Image (tube, rainbow, N blue to C red; front, side):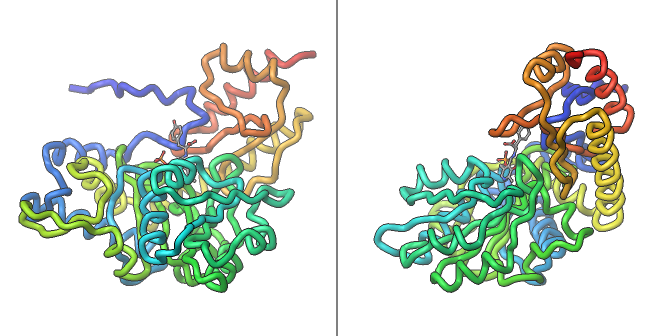
Length: 353
Ligand code: 0PR
C-alpha cells in the first residue's frame, strides 16, 4: 500500500531538511526500536554507526575519524565546544565565532558557561580572519569556521582560521552541518585534508538525505571524543561520549543507508543539479531587477520588498529571511525547477507594479 508522506515538500523553499532517500526511509523503519546509546546490546546498529562515521570521515577527508551520529547539528556543535573546553581547561574560557555561525553556538555557550565572542563577517558574509585574530586570546578554547553558512551558503577561509586558532592555543571547529555533502565536489578548502581542522559538524539529515535525526560529529584525534566520555557503570559498555543517552537507531541506520546509496556519485550528481538550479534561479531573479547575492553553495539570497515576501507566504510558500532581510531559497533535493518556475510565476503575479 502506498502511503502519503506526512510532510508536504512541494512549497518548502526554506528548509534544510528534505525527503529522505528511499533506502534511508526503509532503514529508519527497520531500526526504529534500537538504541545506539547502548552499543553492547544493540550491536547491529552500533556497527552501522561505525560505518557511518567511516564514510563521514571519507567525505570530510579524514582517514581515521573519531566521532558519532548526533541528533543534529546543534548537538554536534555543543559537543565540539564542550570537548574543547574540557581539553583546554582555562579559567575563563571563550569561543570565537563569526557572526554567520548558527545559533546553536549561543546555546552551547549558555549551557557550558563559556563566553561567546561573535565577530563581524566581511562584506561578503564570510569570517573576517583579522577580526577573528583580534578576538582570540589565551582563554580561547575554540575558533569556529562555517563551511556552508545557514543564511548565505558561504564557506569561511578554513586554513587561515586554523592558523589563528592554533596560534592562540585553541582548537579549530568547522561547522559543515549543511555544506559538508556538497563541498567535496567544489574547489573549496574546508576539510581535514585541506587544513589542520580539529573537529567538524557534518549532518546526514540535511544534504546527506538521511532521515531525521542524524547529525555528525568528527574529531581528528581520539582525545577529542574521549574528552566527552562519562562512565556508565551499569551498562555493558563502560563509557558514553554522546550528549543524549537513549538515541535514535532510526537516524543512525538511515544515515548509513543513505551514504551507502549516494556516496560519492549520488551526492555529486545532486550537487551538480542543485548548483545549476541555484544559478539559474539567481539569474531569473536578477532579470526581474532584484539584487541577488553571489551564489556559492546552492542557497539563493535576494532582496525583495517585504510586501511581496508576505504575499508569497500567503500563497503558501514556506520561505524565510536572513537577519538582514533577504529572501532565502535553499535548493535542497526536493526543490525542483518546476517548483521554482511556479514560484517565479507567483512573484510575477504578486510583485508591486
Ligand atoms: N549548523 C548549521 C550551519 C546549520 O545551518 C544548522 C541548522 C545547524 C548547525 C543546526 O542543525 P540542527 O537543526 O540539525 O540542530 N540550520 C537550519 C536553520 O536553523 C535548520 C533548519 C532545518 C531549519 C530545517 C528549518 C528547517 O525546516 O535554519
